[in-house]
Amino acid sequence: MRRVAIVVLAVALGLTLAAVVASDGARRDLVAREPFPGKWIANIDGNRWPEPSGIAWHGKRQTLFVVSDEGHVCEMRSDGTMVRQLRGKKWRDYEDVTVHPVTGMVYVAVEGEEKILEIDPETLATRRTFAVERTFEGKTVMKPGGDGIEGITFIPDPRHPEGGTFIVAHQCMNRTTSGEVSALFEVEVPLVSGGKGDEPACRIVRMIDLGTVDLSAVCYDGSRDRLYVLSDSTDTLFEVKRDGAVVRTWAFPGDNQEGFALDDQHHAYVAQDTGGIMKYKWQRE
Image 1: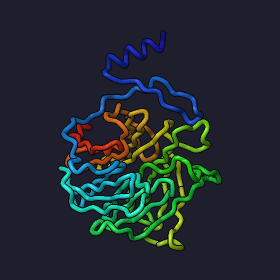
Image 2 (image 1 turned 120 degrees about the vertical axis):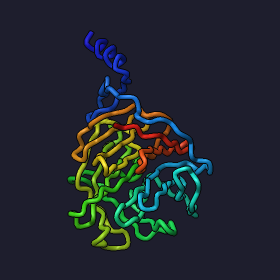
Image 3 (image 1 turned 90 degrees about the vertical axis):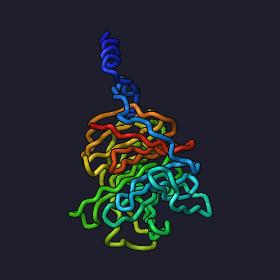
Image 4 (image 1 turned 135 degrees about the vertical axis):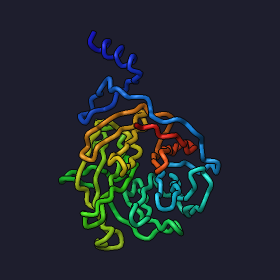
C-alpha cells in the first residue's frame, strides 16, 4: 500500500520513477526524477561526427570540443559548424573531453588505457599523456580490460598546487560480478609539477559513489559549483555537490547519451554515441 501511495504521489507531481543499483548491488527502487529542464533546439551534428562520445564547452574560444570513440577530436561552433578536426590514424577509445578554463588546454579521457591526454586547442595535437592509477586505498577500482573511464571534467582550484583536480567517471556495467566500482573518482594530475617519466602517474584521492551503474559523462558547472553526471542505461542526470551529495535527479531524454556540456548562454549539449549532438535550452532555475 505504501509503495502504491508513493507511485501515485510521484505521478501527481509530474515525476518519473527509476530503479538504480546501490553500492551493494541491490536495486534501489522508486527514485523520483523530475522532467529534464531543457527545451530541445536542434541536432547540430550536420557533419555526422562518428560516434560522438564526449563534449565540452571552451569558454575562452566560445566553441565546443567533441571526441569520438574512434580516436578523433574536433572543434566546432555552437551551431555545429566545423572549425577544425584531427582524425586519429589508429583506433583509440576517446570517451570524454574537458577544458582547463584558465590555461585553455583541452583534456581527453582514453577508456581502456585509463589515460588523460593534454590537447593543444589550436592544433589538436597531443602535448602530454598522463596515466591514471587503477587503485584507491589499496584496492583495484579499475581493472585492466574492465569497463573503464567514460567521463572527465576539470575543477579549477587556485589553492591547489596543480591548479585544480579532475573528476573521472568510471562506467562499470555490473557492480555485483565485475568486482569493479561504478563511481566518480577525483584525480590529481601533475599539470604544473610535471610528474615523472613520459606518462606521469595520476593519484586517485577520493571516490564519490552515486549508487548507480553506467556513469557515462560528467560536467562541472563553475557558476553553480555543481557536477552534472549522466547514467546512460538508467537515462538519469544527477546534479551533485562537490562533496558527493545528490541535489536533484532528472529523467534524461535521448539514447546512448555519452557526453554532456553546458555553455555560458544557458544551453546544454548532449553527445549521443549512436550519432547526433543535441542542443537544448537549459532551463534550470
